[in-house]
Image (cartoon, rainbow, N blue to C red; front, top):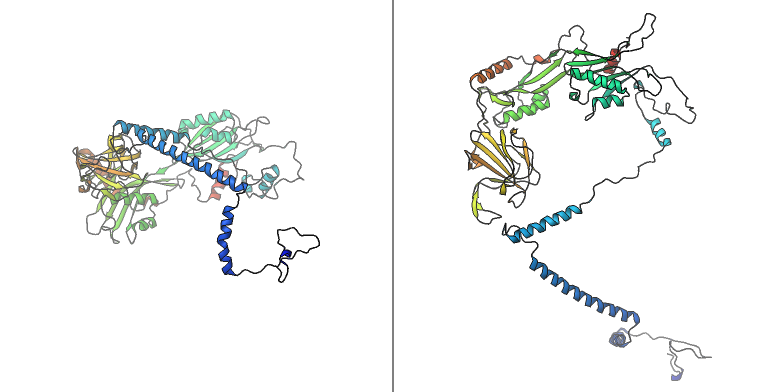
Length: 580
């Protein structure tokens, strides 16, 4: 608005400009107080203004959604009342065995089948290789390999073929090929020879000859065999087997050889091998004097025995055997002496093999000496007097805290007071359960509210039972040792969660497991006790370290070298036709 002008000459921004008149709008600044007074008028004017099409469509959509939301809420309430009347999922801890409980059990089983039906497929997905696979790439990788040339390798940058290499149309083959093959775990003797390129007829002949000395299936995995293949009878045909030598057992070496292998005429011409394969047995002299080791306990019994040369497996078995008789932490002192005897074999060719523990003893410096010897087909350890009593307390079946002791209590599922004829151990699902002592499995399987259970008979009228297992590791009739895994923690039967319910019986009556301090084993008597003491005297007469002495080689015996490179050289010299 311009000051001092005619009111008719006022012009607004919304009016079209007239001809010959210039549009000039000079707004005045409104003070904040006046602006606050005009805000309510502006809001009311917006409410009274007619709605746009967008606002009308938005309001109509909101009204429809409100109707549908109301209908959905009514349908949901009706469905909830209907499912409440049907009662498909009742509490399975109530009214066990009733029709309502069986209906809930059916719902649970049905949902389980549905879950199994939609179980995801665990088939591994095939991924794109990390690098392209082509002949050029394989050739480049092969040229970068580093393999021993002494074993016939042709890899490496200088040996790898390039574009300048022209392949030969034909090349003469080696008259013989010598190789070392290894029997892999799960492999068979025949398939091993087949992969080596031996003809099928020679494979059958070799299997039959080896089977005369040892069972082919009993050859230990990892056995290495020296194979010598002869000249092909025709191009493309498999090579014949000229010789095969390997260590079948610790005391037996077998050799298959074809007549004429390594034979040369007077003028130095080698004779072509011919004729069938023949078996040659090389019996290896073996000394089976047990190994006896004695020494001070020191600050650590395990370290002292290992430093004295006792194998780690024998040390562990020694500690486990003595722990059943004495408290290794409190009753053994540093000044005491250990005495251990293990089965030991020495071959005339230099190999040594340690076996199982035969005798475990400890001299406790003036106190009673502990002497335990393995005896019988079951391999149990008996004291020097022939008594097989376990003096230490029973093992805990699982490494967990006791959540419920022996006695009266309110059953967590049944809801009334009843006798709790055992002890409950807290353990997570799948925890291994071990036998508290040696025994025999008298029952294994489902046992009512106890679920999957295993019962052991320990002799002397004492037995134990382990309940609510998820899986068993033994079966009825088996003999188990102290600490052996017999099953795994679960929640089968009447159980509120994974735990172990452990029971003990004496003469058929349930007793408190915490009241039993030891388990009496069988006692030796009569002729068996006499034989036991004779064997114990023979073991104690063994000189300390006698088994570690070298055996004097007999004529014709060759000691195996210790280093791998020497073994390769010795194997090559043993092959027919090899010269020094």
